[in-house]
Amino acid sequence: MRERKPKKPSFEDDGRVIAPMNVDGMPWYSHKAPRTGQECNPSEKLSREEARAYRFAALKSALLIVAVFGAAGAAFIGFCLLIWKLL
Image (cartoon, rainbow, N blue to C red):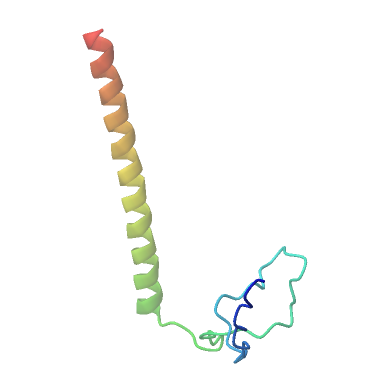
């Protein structure tokens, strides 16, 4: 005869959400779902200096990305030209 396996302890749900699955486009998406985390306050305006600093930071990050992709493209073209000359 087979031995019985011991019963697993019952699971108790404490209500915490580990990974929210309420995503736009999914069939179960609910517009009324509670939002977690920090909510922005739309009545709070940025000063001119803060807005300028945010724009400058965004411009710097965009230029960095363009520079990295440009350097990678130039390196690839240089590599292709080097291989072409050797053949």
